Amino acid sequence: MVLFGIVVSTAYATNGCFANGLSIESKALAGAGVVLPQGSLDASINPAAMAFVGKRIDLGLSLFNPNRKYTVEGTPSGFPAFGLTPGTEKSHTRWFFIPSIGANWQMDDKNSIGISIFGNGGMNTDYHTNTFFGSSPTGVDLMQLFIAPTYARKLAPNHAIGISPIFAYQRFEAKGLEAFSGFSSDPSHLTNNGHDNSYGYGVKIGYLGKVLPFLNIGASYQTKMIMSRFDKYEGLFAEKGAFDIPATWTIGIAIKATPDLTFLADAQKIYNSDIKSTHNPFLPNLQKSQLGKDNGAGFGWDDVTVLKLGVQWRSSKDWTWRVGYSIGDQPIPRSEVLFNILAPCVIKQHASFGVTKTIGNSELKFALMRAFPHSVTGTNPLDPAQKIKLIMNQWEISLGYAWKF
Image 1: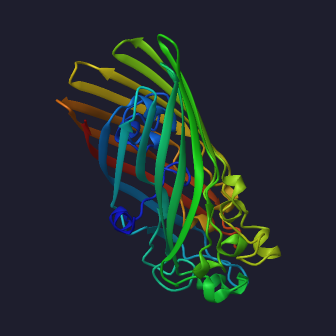
Image 2: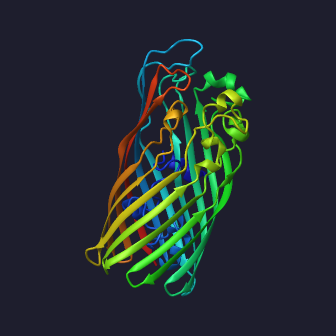
Image 3: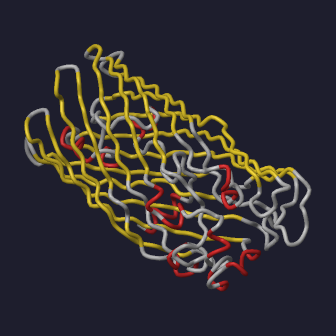
């Protein structure tokens, strides 16, 4: 797991703190596919799908390019207001590698076991300036890695359930936040303490069924991931460094217009409101409770709902083509722009394209994703004379290989 985490580096998620898609096929469908068995990374979206994918190994590698910046307008009011230097600052690191691997074994005609290993998001910013008048650079670095062993069983030829106990690893670092020391319950564990590690667990369960010859339905639910605390940052995150991963559910349908043409629609909900470190508002919490306390200021993230649409066309026995589009909420209210300079996850819309080429028992896979530019503008809560604008857009190119045995 350590070697895998080193290769992953850090990515910036596209739907709040979650990736839009995880397997190459799902990425090509803008994250849709909870009802469409494709490969041994399907446990990342629906464990039940593993009952239908057979014996195979899937490898993937994505090159992710999140472009994030913020703009400050207005002259600082001066003490005691907390104004920022006017202008635009871009986060420096622009390219990240994100690998994934999965394997599935069909034990008999009803039962299968598998394992999926993937990065499910994170967040990274590194502004080469003292944004909050602390040290330089300013930013955060969060990586999330998931290992999901899976058992799936067919209840009938066209219906299956699955379960994946999930083991999670997080790695985090914060820099340049010294200006908030007076608001922290433990200033020595607020910023500039290097990387810290967090471990935890949760469960994902799923169902997939063919209810009509042309209609599949499916659903999955992932529990909140209970994570150990970031001890080095117990003066930053609420609940003494707690940073659990929110619960999600996904439901979907797939309609086969012809045997080779399938239309997909998924809906996903992400419950950021269950996690104090991400959901607690910046104000009035910063005035009423210290950072690191249960009611300490957080990022103020709202829950997120995402609609994902995809089309898959098999033009021949060797070629399968995919396109997708997703639209959803972004989690950051206008009132929360100051702290979210560290995590400007404001993306709302994605478009994607992909193709799979079958060569004997192997598959070569490709996906391209574009997250369209979006911004959120709000008043600096600590200096009302200023406006802060958070801006992001993204590109992702993914390549994959599968071997069926």
